[in-house]
Length: 177
Image: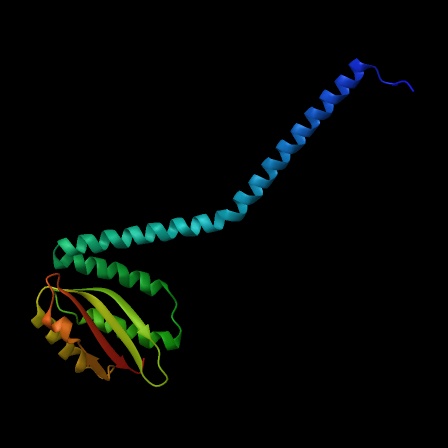
């Protein structure tokens, strides 16, 4: 049995098939890469936005730690504007009111770093951590919080009152919020 195609035609046909295979594989890889990029784009944008927000918060925290109270008030005003942009449901409104009250009545030497909210069956707890320049300010802050109707109890751990060199403190308030 003899070949119908000559060796030169067979080589030309083989080269043509190889070129088609390479082009098809390249087009497939480009298509899959494009689809993967489009699928990951929303997550990338979300991560970049979070990084930008955290960087801005860090810059505000660092600048407020080293500047005058007027800059601290500006940072607080900016944070309040961001909070106002978020819609709050009625159950979360009482938590937001409690946090806003705690921020508003804090002494000048206190910097609040975090809030941790724990919801209970009848009573909820809001834990605060931060730094304070003078321990007597912490005692006065706790007394001021005790005087508010929103808070049932205000607890200051003994370690916070005894103090550390860094001025860190923690405070826990309970109430129906």
